[in-house]
Length: 255
Image (cartoon, rainbow, N blue to C red):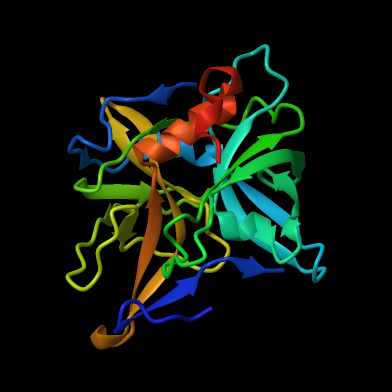
């Protein structure tokens, strides 16, 4: 889908048809993002899985990515994933999604909570996230990553993790004509099917997810330059995540 934002920027949705919550920073604090070193990258990229979701409305399959979070204990019978909303929701509602590791199917999605959608929202990236619960535990050899809140003023360099071996650092961009505190604009290489890939930074030497890649901006006034866009893990988002994980203690935060 192509839309104007606000005049000279177009949106390209990048879905392909076919622990512990850490709080070293909150949305009110400033964070200097730091990309992963080679060892941290190798340890983290196995925590990204592929989602293949079938839309009951049109019968099409949609490929995206999800990150496995370190939020469940050994006694739990499920795992929790974060991903982009547009990969798991279609015209007929939630799609039937299956989880794939390196080469084979490793699980399926039992239920999900998705971002609330404002019919007046003019930026489809703003609430493009979903929290998924698996039916059963995923294999132990899949890494579980921690998550941290990211504030609107956070800058620096991040790593977009999507199972490939490309560990180059990505710069957080500052667009003069566009401002949305929910989003991180970055220059990571992206292509269709990578929506849901986590944006990861090192915090005290430990990889933390601070955003989810959801698509691209096309800068029309800059010879069609493309920049990635990610949804920040804001404090409100983390409140929703905690409520989903611990419904008895924070049920009011789940939309």
